[in-house]
Image (tube, rainbow, N blue to C red; front, side, top):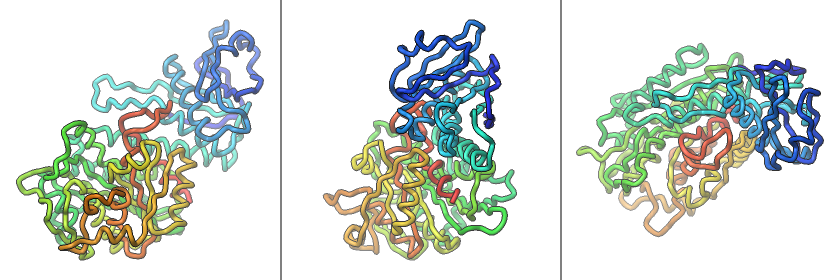
Length: 482
């Protein structure tokens, strides 16, 4: 979908004109609109309520309710733009004009409008023969002057939507198609057209040479070969710094020998959502998303199966950094994969800051429900920056504590570490982060546990309640804008 800024609406009959109507404000509509008194009582008072108006000459408008002017937030605009896009799709109209005349079109609102309209109408039926194709081809925001800041906001919104949708497509693919090798293939396809991005893929032989015993232990029960993808984005001109994004890419997780219950096990195709978010970010970077940093994207793509060669509870493996790990539960496998990914980044990349994102713990749901993702780390400034970026993107993160007492619970009896706390300690989400903390050395590090939000969460006009949600892709794009 193309987007543009205009100082006025063209008023074309093929264009659905969407008006923002703040609660309590007097509508200001074109002369050929139906009289306000004939319809205003039918428009609801909640953000996202809308009403289609029809003129005698065949013209159509949609009135979109938002909060009072002083209370309007970016997500109100995101929701209204998504509603307008959906109405245009249902009416078979190819263009939407989103009218800001009742509310100042600030850059955050411009970005939110592009995001909401861009993410709306996504069909999660990725393998359906009759998967819905979008009708709307163009979004116009008016009256909005085309200054540099406004144009940058519009592009940021476009890129955020593109990254989110790309991640959702990956999430919704089944594990028999999106194998580790297929994931790596798609990463290469993302990087290939861009002169600013390089991609290297490590197979199991190379990982064994690098002594990634923690990651390879997870993979050994599967017929699918594990892959470690390393993407490198370099900006034009001098880089502001070097950042690393690391994604857990469990293309399917049975739990291994510590087998999961059969109910809803099909959802374990979503256990690669962290890697999907990272690749969604690189998709946006390949399309021209703004980023002044050198960015390294690491995807640990593995399948966890209970094959005859699968690792057993009680096995001890050695990670790339030399730490030995007693695997008490083979279903706590994501941290084993990320351990080697993090150690690899510390040794090979040496970033100024690194962010890992993973559907790491079901305990995150018990702690936060489906309304917030968990965030932990070793650098408060980086954590605060991540939370601020998430708020701007309309994604919610909540910080959980991590200190030496929690870390000590991860130390093992027969090896340096154990991959879960002893029974009865609780704090499963904190346990996962504490385990990972032993692989980051002194590099500033932020851990995003998105298990509670990756495929379940509040329904929005731009986001379904179930299925891949592309969580963290938009937040990380905000971080990368600097």
